Image 1 (cartoon, helix red, strand yellow):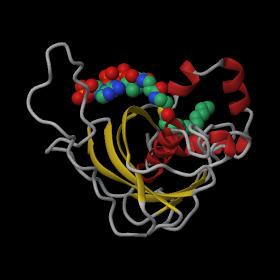
Image 2 (cartoon, rainbow, N blue to C red):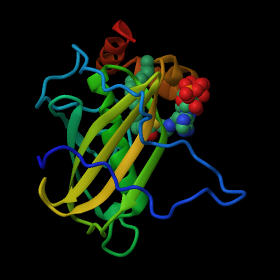
Image 3 (cartoon, rainbow, N blue to C red):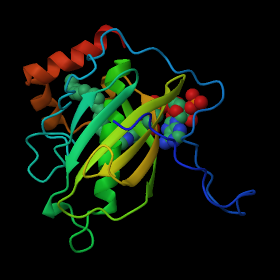
Length: 213
Ligand SMILES: CCCCCCCC/C=C\CCCCCCCC(=O)SCCNC(=O)CCNC(=O)[C@H](O)C(C)(C)COP(=O)(O)OP(=O)(O)OC[C@H]1O[C@@H](n2cnc3c(N)ncnc32)[C@H](O)[C@@H]1OP(=O)(O)O
């Protein structure tokens, strides 16, 4: 890997927002955020993180058009992930769709929560697109947790084309919010929840979260 993930540069422009502008919550951690230790239950550095759900568009091995992204635990509060762009992920001809690339960042940033051993969902995600990504490219993503404040988990990631030292194509920052497992059972479509509950492996992984919510 290419050293620690560099946080995206400050947004261009300055001064107060224009009247009527929507002011969104920042994805940069506040000064009193903490960087907690890696959870004792976190997968060891180098361990594949696996998929949290077989049918997940981001990481599910059973999603034929999905990203099938695979992530590996890094040192500390870092992960790396690889994603090969497929023809079905095109936006412009021969180029990856920006929304698909954003999904790859979302999914990778989401896997960081394994290191804290807590389920969390994306509250806010910001993406900078720095260069076009060809339709058959392999994207190497490096992500880390930048701070935790209450239930809010702040993180940043960088995606490079072709290898861990390839050119940077995409940067992202996110704010995830810790949730209980009931978030999924309460809001998910009942037939999918039932199927998930029948999946012994998934249940085992979910229960692992419940030991130390
Ligand atoms: C048994 C079967 C189950 C199987 C389960 C398998 C295990 C699964 C494990 C892991 C799965 C991970 C899956 C990853 C997939 C990739 C990631 C995604 O794409 S996730 C999908 C997209 N995201 C959403 O759908 C969120 C929709 N939003 C919500 O549900 C709520 O708004 C939620 C939970 C985010 C917050 O609601 P509140 O009622 O719990 O909490 P409040 O009080 O509103 O917020 C808490 C703090 O967070 C801030 N906050 C909340 N939402 C924010 C936002 N959007 N932007 C900025 N700040 C936000 C608030 O200002 C507040 O901050 P202050 O504590 O007051 O400082």
